Image 1 (tube, one colour):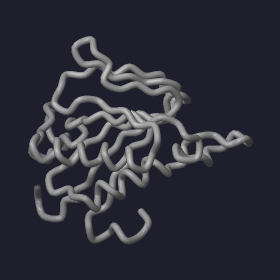
Image 2 (tube, rainbow, N blue to C red):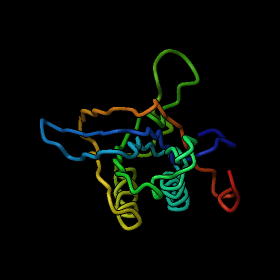
Image 3 (cartoon, rainbow, N blue to C red):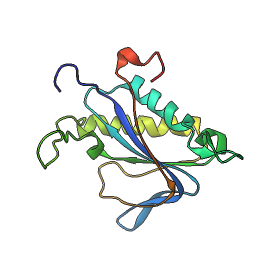
Amino acid sequence: MPPGTIRSVIALIQRVSRAAVTVDSRTTGEIDRGILALIGIERGDGAAQSERLLERVLTYRIFEDDAGRMNLSLSDVGGGLLLVPQFTLAADTRKGTRPGFSTAESPETARAMFGRFVTAAGARHPRVACGEFGAHMQVALVNDGPVTFWLRTAPDADLTGQE
């Protein structure tokens, strides 16, 4: 990556009424109301970025309160969390008409990081399901709203403050 490039763990989160992931006609993860989070890992990402992203996914206020305002988080509503590894989120799309993947983490390292992310999510949230790293997955969802946000973590130096 060029000097000065911001490296981050990326999550594309969608508020869903339901979502499921299948691999070879086998359901690997399924939730009702909650968040579907597509997770991308860039080269150089580490535990600090991963922990910060998990915190943001669990506490990002995208669910409506009694007044109809987005004031409640996944933790507040107790919804499901479906985590799906998505290496294409880390693609370099700045030039041309074909994505480059030199910015994505190596499959071995990304697999381990995604596994740790799923484990940490399960330790902090009661309803976690996931897709299968490296598999060709079919993702079905009903986006509620639609509500979709792209979350990134800050580089190591910026993890102490608010983003």
